[in-house]
Structures are given as C-alpha cells and as structure tokens.
Image 1 (cartoon, rainbow, N blue to C red):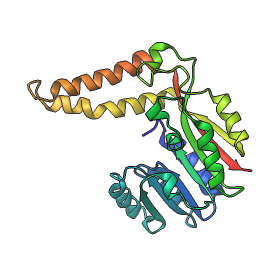
Image 2: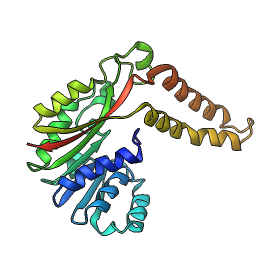
Image 3: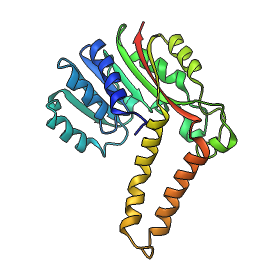
Length: 240
C-alpha cells in the first residue's frame, strides 16, 4: 500500500538483509510482503511483523509458507507500541509514522521526529532501518492539500526529513523518492478494483452510484490535486 516498484522494493530489502542481525521488526507490516522479501534474502534473519489490523495475516502466512520462510516469520496484531520487542537488529517502517503521533485523530502535521526517535531506541547501534513516509515533492497548494488533510504543513520536504534522520541518531546511507510512474501505478491500482466492479454491474445496482462516486472522487483528488505534489521518501538508515 505505497508507491513502490518491485525493483526499488528489492533494493531496499537487500539493504536490510545485508546489514541486519537476528531480528527485523516491520511496523505497520500489512500483508508482510516487504518483510518476506527480506527473509528470502537472508536465511539467518527472523522477522516480526506488527500491524493494528490483522486481516491480512492469513494471506501473509500463505505467501511466507510458499516462499519457505514461514518458520522465521512472526505476525502480531495490535498497537505496535505495546508489542514492540525490547530491541531489534533491524527495522522497517513504511507509512506508519502515525503509530507515534496523533496525526490522524487531531489533524496535525505528521510527526516524523517521534517516529524516528522511537525507531532509534528500538534498534541496536549499527542496525539498518528503512523508513518510508509521505513528503511534499513540490510546494503544496490548497487544491493539492484539499483531498488529503487540507493542511499545507501536513508533510515536510525531503531535505528536512534527511536532517531529522541525522538528528535522531541515524546515518543516512541511501535516499529514494517514489517516481511519478510509481505513483501513477499505485493510484491506478487502488481505483482499478472499483472500475472493474462498475464494468461487471448494471447502473441499476443499488451500490453503483456510490462506487462510481468513490472512484471519481479519488481520481479527481489525485489527477487534479496532489499528483506531482505529494511524494514518498524511502530512507536507508544505519543507527549510530
């Protein structure tokens, strides 16, 4: 659930696999697909995936079993702050900064600093962290912010995120930003299921109008709003 190509995902996973020790924690793991990639690349690593919603865990277990890493994957449903191990030798946090902030509930700017400091406290010195989060790629406009939280200060720019990572106790090793193609693919994939549903059901269906409105609202918000303005950064970090 992020604008991330297979090529970039493999590069990020390889960074973790190369530098990690025994345990890698993925906060907000979803279906744990990224964590499974890491486990495939390093047979000595044990993965712990934590997500508030566990509705994707069954799928994750099936994929992990098919790829021969199920015995090294632990999935935990619940608040990440309550289930975090005392320490880890690697961590992944992609789009899960809200775990350490009240951003969603209070409509506040995203609290990158709290997330980065918590990740540094989690991992041992020398451990790798992949931190991925939304940023502004261009100065935001009211039109771009409206489909999001409506705040021009909701996100920060990439240079500011890099400085935050350094000040939180990390060395910044690699800096990535999702390409426009990755964003277009991500947004298109999100709305594709609704478009396919419309193609399979008549306009007289009681849910037709609502589904049509949902897909049109999402596409308008993206293509006429935050396309090219909202970005996604992926930082490869080493704890120092």
